[in-house]
Image (cartoon, rainbow, N blue to C red; front, side, top):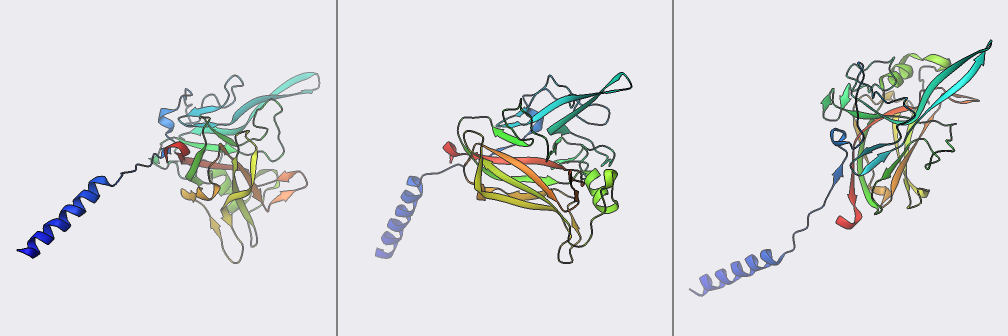
Length: 267
């Protein structure tokens, strides 16, 4: 009988402890382009219709603001003016053909959720600096709240054009990769003034031909961003071993999806 009473007492203590234990729920915010505040329409190739629209600025999607800036370059030839539209930063795409002729086409033919689902591509400029831009860089993501966030992870991959160039060479003198080459994506955190926080960075090789490897990223790769800690945004940069005196010859595009962060106040 004493054993039974002791057993019941222990059970009651366990149940009481369980009831008093505080349950904590971590709020993770993950990019969902289907719920973007910016109106996104697509052309026949599944590319954002406003890609070159100079009246449309950054892309707002949930907790994130993706830098996008379109402009027009004009030049005169034999008395005639020609206009050349271009953009820097992020674009939305749902191209599902992995078309190497379309720079905004991911090699995966779709986002993390599957073929034909939307994702982001980014054109990083190693020599552009928009004086009109609050970012002063070409590939920033600003967290849309005044509070800081703790980045958790992001999925990245190559565009079809980049993969084709790495394997076969491409335009403007770009060559196929060989032993010793690499194509590197670097992520850094931004402070409340949108300045780069030096010291912490995350690197991912979109292609790596060093030490006998022949790796080219052709699927969505999950990149751990937790080493960056709490911050107010992210900025991306790229590095390739295929360059000339004017800059990178490898097309400086990459694709991005499913960025996830934890609001610091919700941890």
